[in-house]
Image 1 (cartoon, one colour):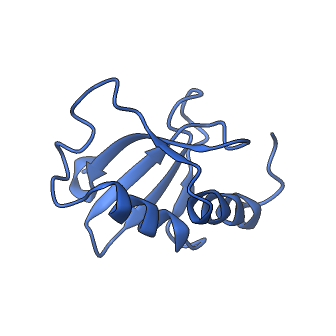
Image 2 (tube, helix red, strand yellow; image 1 turned 90 degrees about the vertical axis):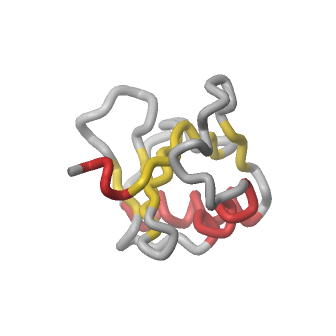
Amino acid sequence: MIFISKQEVVRTIREMARTRKVYFDNSGAFLFNQAPHLNTQHVIDILSTATEGVVTVHEDRADLNKYSVVSPVQDVEIYLDADLRKELTVRAIMPIDHRN
C-alpha cells in the first residue's frame, strides 16, 4: 500500500486504532519494559488520536518500524510496522529521550 500523503497515513492509523485492529509484537517480552506506565489500552488511545504533528514516516528505515507516533504526554514513541493495510502492529515502544 502506497500512501499519497502523511494525512492519509494518519487517517489510516487512527481508523485502525479505533476499530481495534492493533496487535502488539510480543515476540520479545520486553515490549513494554521501556515504558512500564503504558498498557495496551493507553497505546490504542494514543494511536486513535494521532495527528500529523506526531506521526513520523521513517524513510531511512527498512520495512519494519517505518512509521512512528510520538506522545509527548506519555513521553514515548510508538513504532509501527510498515504494513498498515490490514492492521497496526506495534513493534516497539521507546522513551522519547532514546533518540538523543
